[in-house]
Image (cartoon, rainbow, N blue to C red; front, side, top):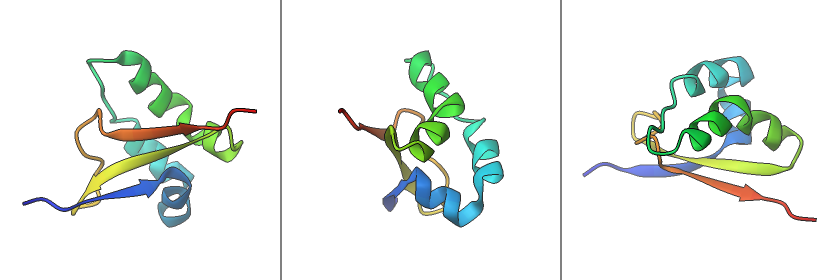
Length: 78
């Protein structure tokens, strides 16, 4: 049975760096909802750095982002 873990996108930036994270996120795919794919690939890092939202990814034991739809997005509302 696979083991899964959630990780905050800001923690991922701290662990592997923004450039490497952008490279990994460029492979993210969500054919069921292209808007999710667009947000994760193009906006998730900037939104997190600006504290507008925080993305959490579900990763497997190999530290790869699991099935494309498995992510959690939390927004700040003012």
